[in-house]
Image 1 (cartoon, rainbow, N blue to C red):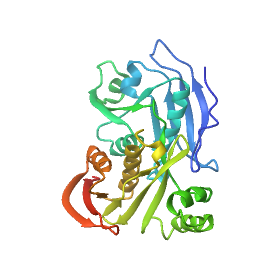
Image 2: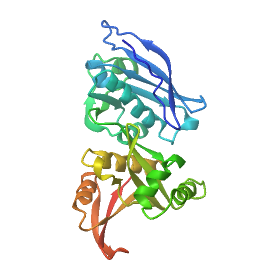
Image 3: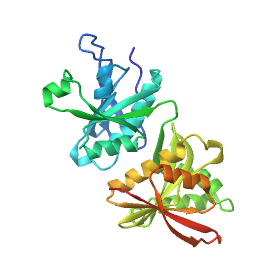
Image 4: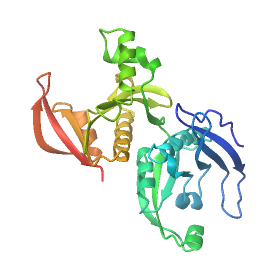
Length: 298
């Protein structure tokens, strides 16, 4: 049974259903939804689809396919579409799914990383696989996505986030001061030039923030600030990966993380994500030693 899809939208993206396709047991096809990837005003920017269920074909071909038209690339629309499709997959009872791409398709591989995928293997396609027979493809990177956790996404802070900003960042300030800060952060002159701050959301609920400081050719992250009541759920790792995907898409080649030396949890997180320390330390404004960690974005 196909479900309602009107909820598949964010502030800057919506998925508009174009057709559904029933299962075909003879050809090994599972039921599928086909969408147009559109802007809030309905401008068509690409397409995506969700294949519901698992079999041999979905392992090698993936449960999700996507294509963004060239004028709209570089804004993570494919990754954001995947995050929306994860919600629909959950409503069908799926606890995981796969997305595959060619090993040399770096933009698609980065989309999988942005959406939180884990590389299972670079699989050789079976001799009777349609992709091998029709287009001569021989290998696929197979990424697995765990749907048992809420979908984590980043978005710009909005004016209606002023109460949250005041409570979390300006405990002695006012909501008007928080609103002025958000408006300043979101100006074109400010974004990409100094630093950006993003809201970290889990299925739409704000669970923390993450910031990027711009120092070309490197970008600096102070690490995610996940609110205490939402910690230990994997949100921090997902937030860092998505922030780095944004930085990589803007041409940065090095990611730096500044972490207080006694913050064992953050140090362990960044090491797990491929950061390495160069041993450099300094004292921050609080007089605490800070370690610098680096990771290549190439």
